[in-house]
Length: 137
Image (tube, rainbow, N blue to C red; front, side, top):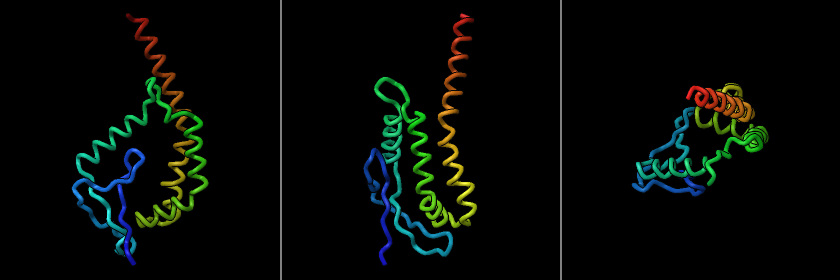
């Protein structure tokens, strides 16, 4: 059976590495070859950082990635595909299923469910701090 070759996902595209270098990804459970992974170089890292920065800021400078509906949609999708994510985590790390479920996948889901609340709190604290700073000057 052929093992898959993975790719970087940068700016909504799957790409290999510019250098063509790859490394083996082996199962921590039994050492079997899972697939080949492209090695990221400076150009891939720079492109990923640039794409992430562009995705975070809309033209007006507002961060839309942390909007409540977007976060809740991500949380709902994690719930919908929880078994698939747990299987992937177990396969990738060799963790027991219960551990991967509760410490990894469910924790990520809770984080996305709470991000809108944290974002509002942080925004409020920043506005309060800005108001106090303006009052002093």
